[in-house]
Image 1 (cartoon, rainbow, N blue to C red):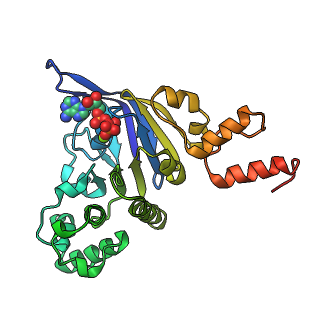
Image 2: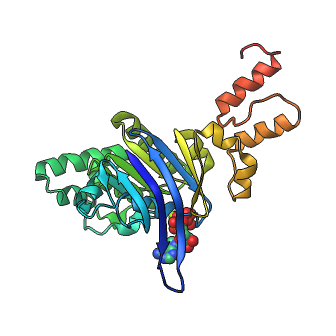
Image 3: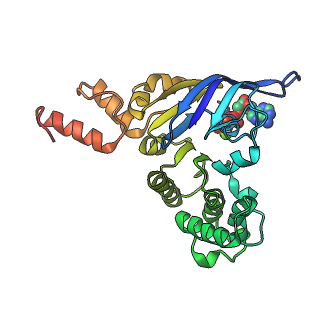
Length: 285
Ligand SMILES: Nc1ncnc2c1ncn2[C@@H]1O[C@H](COP(=O)(O)OP(=O)(O)OP(=O)(O)O)[C@@H](O)[C@H]1O
Ligand SMILES: [Mg+2]
């Protein structure tokens, strides 16, 4: 579904403020995977995802997404934007229509769909993110922060993309709104076999949701593996300014204190299982 080969990206190349944001990035992501993308601030996460829907072009290397070669001049970027949905950081700043309905409808209308199809997609997308039908005729500016965020996500979903990329979709939301949005995204991913890339600062969220975790550091891929393998490397993660989930930290402490727990435990269920197995003298919990 996604393949990046020897990708580098340099901002303001040749100028006095030249900045290499990505270096030698090689990754492959298969259809239907849920990828968590983490890294310290400035590590290149936003740059990487903007390459994936063609907002920016790599300085070097090639980018293929959803069957499009984004480095091929003949590729129609318009089509790419429809298949690769990107929800940017703080998307609510990009709402601009007079009603919520029109805002969600903006993408599908641009695709040239019939009004009937636009109408049904808007209602479906709004329902998916938990926007009640009576809100559709309101101004997006009258909504709460969490609701605005949902509207922005619905606008991308209404295009029915094959790949959904979200840059910190829950930043600044209260814990309840956060969990609900993440749950909706996970649910859609499972129901529609949607490929998802979720940029997040929260290790707990990434641990809970992702099939694989991509760790960026200084513009390079530091790790790309299943959560258990990533969280085994707590020492390296802390060297690059990241932590492991709290439950992993607790298990690491217990192991240091002599309890024979495996490395890289990242769910409470697994921790519970392993601890009770040990306490019960090696039998199953
Ligand atoms: N438009 C730009 N012009 C120049 N440099 C930029 C630009 N955007 C980003 N950079 C630089 O490129 C590097 C990577 O930035 P990027 O925004 O991709 O990081 P990030 O991992 O998304 O960070 P954050 O967690 O803060 O969102 C940083 O050093 C940043 O300062
Ligand atoms: Mg960013």
